[in-house]
Image (cartoon, rainbow, N blue to C red; front, top):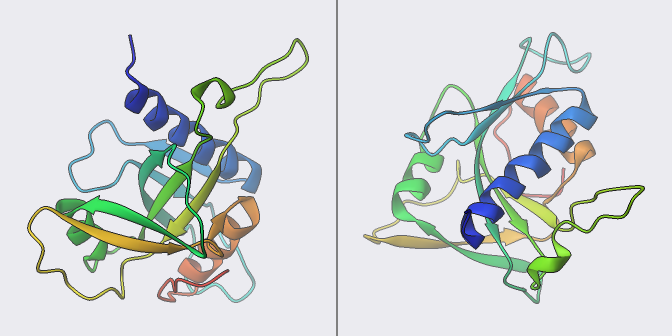
Length: 172
């Protein structure tokens, strides 16, 4: 039997898988999360006429919550291990993706005889330009609500990666 946090984790995988598929990219789930990377989203070939590299990839640390947030930012406590590994200078750019699910778990995956849907909204954050943390256990990050993750923003992130640009935390 899956616990509620296990279900949230699985739903976050499904959410990003659906977006990657809609964008035309492959989705690779990591067997073990040893480096704060749960999944990779990969393109094939050139994704834009101005691309500098072929077949760009983005590594993603997935988190999910059913807590509601007001305001322009989502304050999210991240284990310091994840914070530091997402902040590291790596060959493949990394982002944090947080899936916000409805408060009531009955609303997460409503279905009828005609359709099954996943209710929630995901947001992304790059920690590449964040200052180091002196905390020992966790670091709260502020995710701008303008950083909504959808198939269009995923394509724009992939284009930025293909141009060897540092992913900036603004609406792409």
